[in-house]
Each structure stands twice: as structure tokens, then as C-alpha cells.
Length: 162
Image (tube, rainbow, N blue to C red; front, side, top):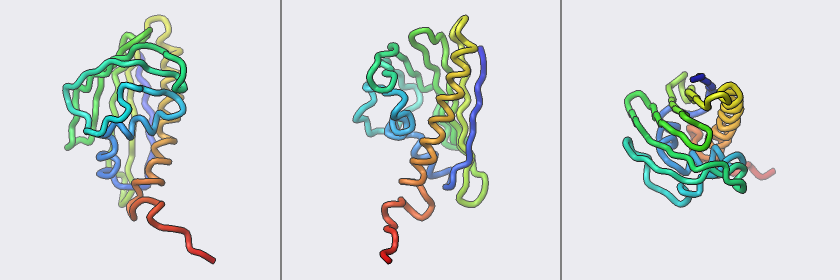
């Protein structure tokens, strides 16, 4: 097992990010361009502790990478933490923890921590995981700027006409 931890500061409240973390639409948004998980398309209800599902993980939305199983083992509103246990293909384990905490007024610290076991490929997969989570966190910044700013979504504040 190898552990990868990546974090970033987001310019909005931890509560706003926590609400978004509980919806698969946010997951699909932050992984867009990298991975697709068609089994989650169209889902609107929040994730629930204990639910488990298996579906195709699609590389760049086109190439079937593997059948991937996600088991949501914890959704903790008090700690603003979601934990999943995942596996599929060459991944024996992909244990993911998503966490957000306040870091100041209208600022929060978001982190992804994953424990990876891919047998002899674990080191390589851990390097890939670090890149995946850096990408996802850039997408979190985009999501925050478009929809989760403390003053409301950016589209609700049109630029002044000169």
C-alpha cells in the first residue's frame, strides 16, 4: 500500500464545498476530461453511506479502462469527510478520503488522500494518483469559481458594460 495526499485552498466556505462533495455531479465535473463513469450519469441524489456500485471506468470518456467498484464506507457531515473503498482492474485497493475544512473567512482547505495497492504496479499507480488528484483539484477551483463563490455563482454577476 502506498499513500498519496494532495490538498488545495479554495476561495469559498467549507460548507459550500461539503454540499458539492456529496453529489455525483461534482465528481463527474472534477473528473471530466480525464475519466468518465457512465453508471453515474444523470444521478441527482446525494451519495449515501453504505451504497456500493460497479460500472465501467472510461479513460478520457472513450476507452474502457476497467470495471470499477466504489463502496461509500463513510459520509461524516461533522468532519466534512467522505471515505470510499474502491477496486477494479489491476487496482486491488483504492481507498479514497475526501475532506474539507475551514481555513479562514470564505476560504477552505480541500484534500484527497488515497491508499493504493496495485501489486507490483503500486509505485507507478501512486504517481498517477498524484497527477489525477492535482487535475481534480484544478477542476475544483474551476467549479468553485463558476458555482460556489461566497457571493454566488459568477454567472449571476455580469461584467459591467463600458
